[in-house]
Length: 246
Image (cartoon, rainbow, N blue to C red; front, top):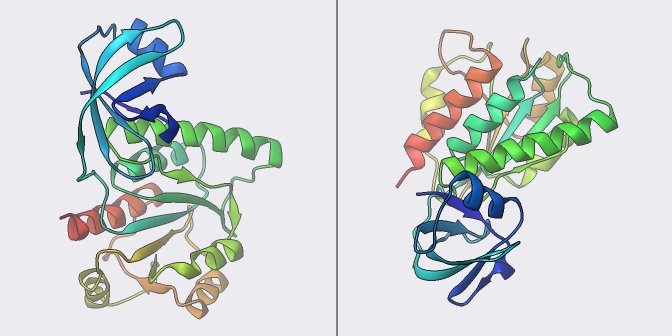
């Protein structure tokens, strides 16, 4: 079943209005007809609004609410992925998979070893594209929300932003003790905010790790093998999803 996101104001009792680019997609790409069922989310409450298409207008599609599925597709904890800017188009893949795996927000981080340097104009363009990728991935994976992709932060600003999280971890190639990693993961509780810091190619600089530790971010190990930046985030998110899924 196809899923679409709408603003909360477009859900009006038993009447749901589809607007914007989704109108053309439903009419001319999917070629759906009156009576066909779709899933709608408002991107906020995590609920799934199951409805049937009632009428096609020129710039709107009118749907009738059939029932509301209260139990959404979201994890019981919010995971914030702080991703060191990688080279080339790796960030697009990382965002897509992070959304599929349940990340709540994705924060690009300009770390010391990040090769990519975005000026203001390029950064705005990139964020718009990345947010579009997050929306597409949210639809595909039937998320109840569209995870936000933040503007690029410095490492210091990222550490400061993560201060609200109850659990903060940073995979680091020099960290030792898999048992410690297992204890942190197994000790997670539903409702906790979780911050995960992933370094760019080359990892985080030693002074960045020191700054993170001072802020209460715990270095962890993901095993004996060195993982690429696009693999490390997916690995942590997969482990967290498995542990938190209810």
